[in-house]
Amino acid sequence: MTTPNLPYRWNLIRPDPLGTLLDGRPEPDLPYLDDLVECGAKVLARSGDGNVHFVSRSADSIFDLLSSTLSATSRPDRVRLLPFSYRFEEPPRPHEIRQLRANLDAMGVSPHVLARRRRPIVFADLVHRGYTFTHFYELLRDWIDDEHEAWEVIRLKLRFVGITERGKTSPKTWRWWQDCAWTAELPRSAVTNVSVDRFFWF
Image 1 (cartoon, rainbow, N blue to C red):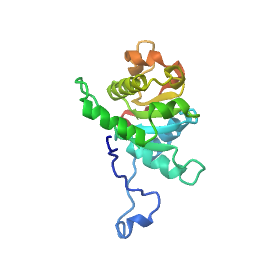
Image 2 (cartoon, helix red, strand yellow; image 1 turned 90 degrees about the vertical axis):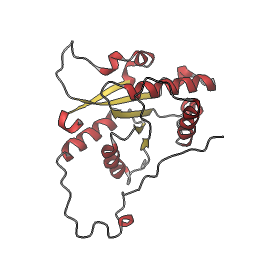
Image 3 (cartoon, rainbow, N blue to C red; image 1 turned 135 degrees about the horizontal axis):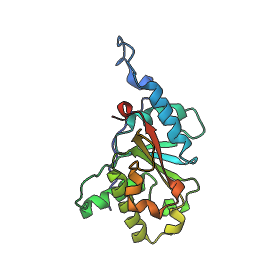
């Protein structure tokens, strides 16, 4: 039995855990606040009322904003962090797969739970080429097969939201999801994007 290994996240929704750490500190400069609010709103809007899991660490600032915004609602846990980042070509080793599955199971992202959940589950991340999404999807798909859960049921509950750098729109524009074969296994509406200004994306 592999023990889940989830990172500690300091909850800063309420100011009291900070104690005196901010005493005498100036107000922070937030040059991209409007972009952050717009991006977060679009991620929620395109999540189909699902629970959003921010993959890797790239979108931590969006998670922080949304978790604070949703803290006083009936669904304060609608957004969560999912610590996974994998861009390499080499397949993960067996012990790494076991650890990932234990971590996901502890977060309620197991094949058993996915097959029985009512709302969609949404995975959001900053996307360049889609490597992290691709590896995560393949690992999740293998796990579903290993557990013999109903893929045709689960596939209708998965959504992927890519936060991408805004570019020109034309039929010849390269789009990450068109270059990832696995996206064809999901309904077309299950893979969507939120495009943002390139400076904000970087």
